[in-house]
Amino acid sequence: MQVPWTGDAPEADTTAARSPPVTSKVFISHTTRDRRDVALAHALAAGLEARGAQVWIAPESIPAGEQWKEHIVSGVMDQCSHFVVVLSAASVAADWVLEEIRLAKRRREADPAFAVLPLSVGSLEDHPYQHYLAKLQAVPYHDDFHAQLEAVVKAVGLRPSVPDALSAYVVEKTRDFVGRGYVFEAIERFMATQQNGYFTVEGDPGVGKSAILARFVQRTGALAHFNIRAQGINTPRQFLENVCTQLILRFGLPHATLPKGATEDGAVFAALLQEAAARLQQGERLVIAVDALDEAELSGQLGNILFLPPALPEGVFVIVTRRQTRIPLVVQTPQETLDLMRFKEESERDLGDYVRLKLETRPGLSAWAEAHGIATDRFVATLVERSQRNFMYLRHVLPEIEAGRYDDLDIRQLPLGLESYYEDHWRRMGMTARPLPRAKIRIVYVLSVALAPVTRSKIARFASDAALPVDELTVQEVLDEWDEFLHEQANAEGTAYNVYHASFRDFLHRRDVVQAAGVALPEIHALIANDLWGEVFDRGTP
Image (cartoon, rainbow, N blue to C red; front, side, top):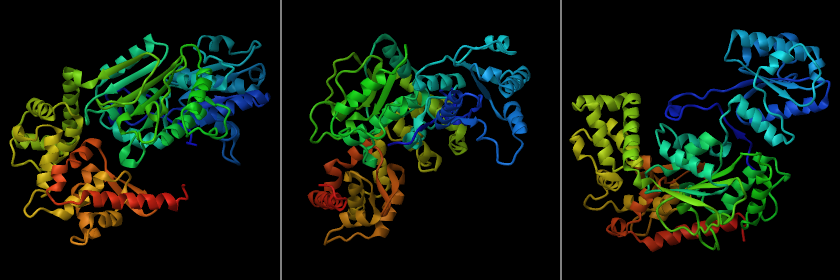
């Protein structure tokens, strides 16, 4: 099962990538006279820490041998940004709880940003601070702990969390994220006007679908699954294991492990959705975000892709992204599709903002424009026009401009569109030279067809034949040249590589590109297939 989620305080959408996250530190005041208060306070502390907050709670936050009174005073007066007090009949009669409230009141009077958050868990007797606390917005009490934790999380202002296993990917996809407000507004309108349903964001490769979904998850804390073919994450089994685990952890469902059969088909997933939906409070939603349906594996599966359920419980929404291609997904709930390609004006505005952000944050890029006598507005307008509304194009071309690889070109001669950029890079890497560099072309093709990252030694073996042996030094030279297109990760055999983005993989799959070099495609496929078949049996899988 996945580890608990972590998160941090929310940031403004257009500046989040440029601003460091703000971490809340929460002081939890409670009495030890009632074991129910102790259990609730410590469960809240664990839940807040899992969401990324720092928590001060006695006695754990007091170092052994230290003066506990001094540490409590310091915790309230100096260290914490929020003060949550569990109010019960026992706590309002406890001298130290009352003292902590007094300290919090004094801190609040001196620092209005310091938040005092009362949480009443039962009937209270009169106490010295009842009138003061009554003036403050209280945290609502819930019998269900999941709902109670969510109420405290909301009151503290923590951004809903991102699973640890996905956090690095989400951070990478949302780096320098700009705009797309019209997409988020459309999703919110759909969820506000429907009881449940599927919302699809579709568009061409490279227009930012994955970044949009990653940002949505970052903003809302939706349960999430990213199909990433470059990392071999695209099977129904992986999806079911990931999402079912998140449902159990997020909603505290009574399952110590994944239920039997959870990854075999969609039956357990649908049942867990029902269990989780039953725990939703009035107005709450359960949202699952699924990226790149077009990259999900289809072989041997009947019914909907990834076993997504055709019917959803009330309050449950699934947000998906995909290319404009046919996907086996038949649903019996409300559904809406947003085609990114129809938003020309909005896309060009966001692309322009992205280029301006890069000019502001990358001195080498602005120096290049200045050296070539190009005003900012012209630079931005030209790059937006040449990109053909494609963010992936800008992610590749802007670093190359900064690196001086287009110094001999007028800015209007930059490649037009992502496909032209790939063609240009292919030529600049010498792939069309005479005689054709057959070894290099075979290496790049191996990278494009491998369904999981492969090591240098395997790339060399797959790319070799009797007439043209390929060594690891040649492989490394190609890896260095094509680094911007590759994903690398560590495995038991060392560092492994494959093609990062589906659009570049598609470019490399063009048979005219590789057949011109006499690459024996069936032979390469057979070698890779045999290798993977051997790995299956090495793992003991039938």
